[in-house]
Length: 496
Image (tube, rainbow, N blue to C red; front, side, top):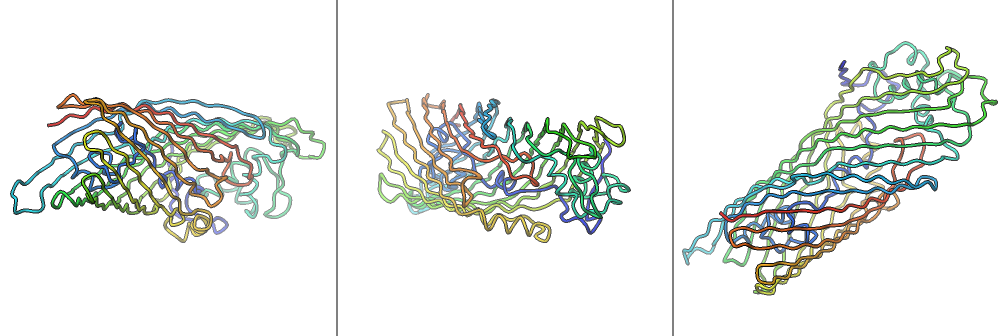
């Protein structure tokens, strides 16, 4: 495959140096998911003041000092996601499942029996988690009464001189110019006046489909250190390395039977626009946390999670085809699939910080109840270099907002058997939640302690509504998506 490296602006007509990022691309990395061990998931992640679980250090790093002995765990999960779409009254469904090894880690606990030493315990842990599984399938279809996806290409073309589209190649142009070039080569528009174009798609109604196939993950490797003072105050810190690998393939199709009497030029009857976007990169963050054993039964926790500073890279492949009537070149089925892999310059993304306040009440050996409240201000999400992302950063600062997340969990023990349940509510990161709604989730699970080892099983369910655009600009119509996740998680832990 021919590779073209687009490193800077080529012509002054265009703005931006990368593919068209949106706030939802940023939220792919800024919005947390509840993953990890089965015990953690069965209680909906309400572990900020509980600790004693390898996944709990992602909420509060002081939690590793709650362990009384060395332990290692490994977790596998079945992720099922169902997307129900409604596009102009037409309802479609897409269902997808995947099995993933999503957690592995261990903690070493060192205790000091010297009665004169108040620092009784030190713990060192390392834990890897698939922090967010990005595998997904979405299919939307319906009849749009007004807007053609051809407007996407027409929107980019306006203001570009015709000699640019006729004399330059696709690989010479930046993202905006390439979109105009694709539309021009598919005969979606014609020149009306210098630097102004008119659509060749006849006005009327348009049947449209959008197929999205996503694969990937956000991985997180945490190195943890924690200690305890008089077994009353527990302090901890994490250093986290983040990894992301994400591929999204989406194909937009449109057809129409609209009359062509008003078009003396060629008339477009079908359009198919294909894209494959690959995003990869790495990042860094840290956590600080404390847990106070206020009484024998009651614990309180406070934790801080820094922003994650990502370095990201995008690679994009595109192609288009159309069916044309009265084409001046007698080409009824123009196709343009350039053999070009666009590799864009590395850019930076900073996600918002998060604060978590927690409380837990422990009923001796019988069980516990716990609650976490987290706050994250998504309006602080930023892309860099800022001179290329000013408009997007301003848009996110104006339209994103702070969101509160509440997690509740409980556990009840009957000898070696543990019964667990949890609840989770997370506010939308948008000021107007029509773009992405609130998330509500429920969970439950069981665990059995064999003495030197444990086996835990969890089930979790969550749902959230949001809007999905067919193309990123040029038309504002969206499909309303309801995403339902059903996950089953199994963890095996062993003392050593």
